[in-house]
Image (cartoon, rainbow, N blue to C red):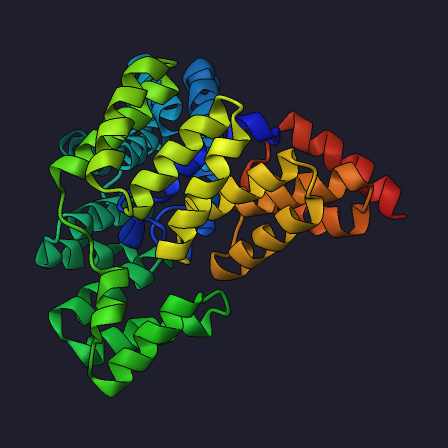
Length: 365
């Protein structure tokens, strides 16, 4: 999970539905807690479903690193082997959600709740799914059910109520997010907006789920083709999108990663820079530019970008991984150590991380 090449395609996902999804997957408040809870469930799986549990564990590891298509395959195999595996069905739902398969995700979350009616991660999943589709009343229903056990739902509820103009309710949930000590800048802005009883156009643009468009669907298709190794087909789509929308941050990010994955860092760099100039919060492009700088030998520049990204979007995420690897390779084990600990907490079965963490602990003295 830690190697740089395994993190390249994942950043394509970061800017998809960029104003919304950057706050609801693992980069979301409470997302790590949800993932940790899912991992805990694995410990209780009976011996009779070991193979399904193994697939599910592999699926969560892939999901954690944003490899949603690959995670989806693992969870699909898991539920075939064990149709009553709640954790696997929940993982299947989240993987389908994160790959834009909303109808299928809805069925998987409902199947999860059919097996375990109060399963917090699936309740949150349905809430976030409906929120992504601007179905605010339905989102509210499931997020409220998830909220007692899933802090990820608090963030969703604050957004739902703000977007509906229900400022007192929005303040209640935004306050819980901020009080948790894990709030990002947007959460703080949401609380301020709720207290002021006014949602600015700028903040709305950050938290309102974008409407699906033909362009966003095409971009998603290109990413899937890249994941499948069908680069020529992806390039045709990306070239057409870039010609039509040469200043769109998501398109620039996608084309940038296309070139970076192909090893052409010189072509990738100006695309990432242009995407960041258009949207300073374009996490995928920030990570992409950091990867470019590292490939060009500018470790200090890469570290600076990842550090800034991590401050905007608390990890563990691609920035956490990038920084951990950068410090580890430099032999700066004291700085690498806490980052590796965060990553291993999220993916406790990762043997490579365990080995690196052990080496870092010895090196840090």
